Length: 465
Image 1: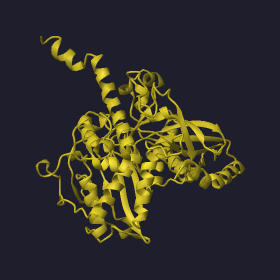
Image 2 (image 1 turned 45 degrees about the vertical axis):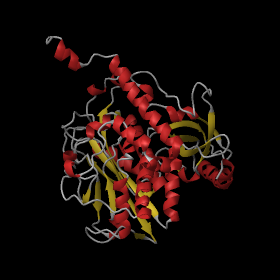
Image 3 (image 1 turned 90 degrees about the vertical axis):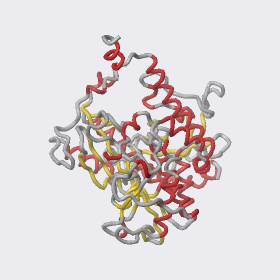
Image 4 (image 1 turned 180 degrees about the vertical axis):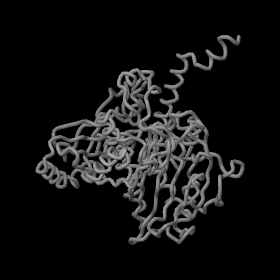
């Protein structure tokens, strides 16, 4: 389908939604674009839902984490946007299914856009298209895919001066303990999350649970299941609005995967729960500790494609500090019923409707669109190709008997770049572009390291040479 076809199909619904929002008191619109790092780049406009499309700056798909801090290089050159082509605009079209009216401030509504080339083709590096393609693939096989993301994250007291200067280590964790599942971590904890849950409900996002995690400043939210694209949209929105509420309360949230030294307290994961449904029934549900044939083959695909997809699950330098299977952050390709030490935890209780797989590899720094697309594609491969899963791991999966996951960003990049699965699922353009974005991370770190003398060098060589 082309831009013109999508625009024609959405025109009447967008017109109706604009009138509905205006009647309900909306005055302003947040327009979101999902970029490579798994966050929204947004602009605020007077209330509008353009059914003829809008210009979109293609450079938004070429931005680095924190816009290049601390090396000061905010963007990388990709085929979509570079010095040779003059950093051009492409086209964007509002997705009416993504329109939300913000219940906590009726002046605002928001919408997520889909990107298109100027010749009308869907932009191949827009991550929403990747999810949509796999969702349609599942539907063609007779299944509805459902996903739910569970985020672990840190909350700290904001110090704007320290944050401007990059002195994040000086920030104080929010709360007075590091106890798991604690309702009394701070006097404002319950009010904060009551407000957050209410805000999310007003835009159709279910927060299934909130808990304190093991670690100073550590918390977790679990989102309710949705279709694949809706689940990815919900995940990115949930992060954005959590950060928004924190900013209002003098706090700051981080989804950096490890902000405590390895071996101390928890790290931040983003577990992805997933199931297939057919004719109103869970297609994985076979009873306690039992999978249907569909569930077993879907699991086989998840496991078979895990190494190829690993870069999407662990996309930053920091996230490899989280790999520690004894702390429930998988190091190898493995699975088990209710096994939190394995890469895939198969859940079959307490009821048939709850049957699902929990993919425990991703960290909280992922792009959920790319993760969900890769997981769903892998599971569907398993069904179509009849891929049987490897042997079950009843306990902590031993490294000598399981295929290891790549242990560095460079190693994951190499597998990703050579993967036929990745090219088939995402296309050569997105595979190349995402590889450029990860190389940008490596280059930034090397530039920073080359310009600094480390604490290790001072302490080891100042007196010891």
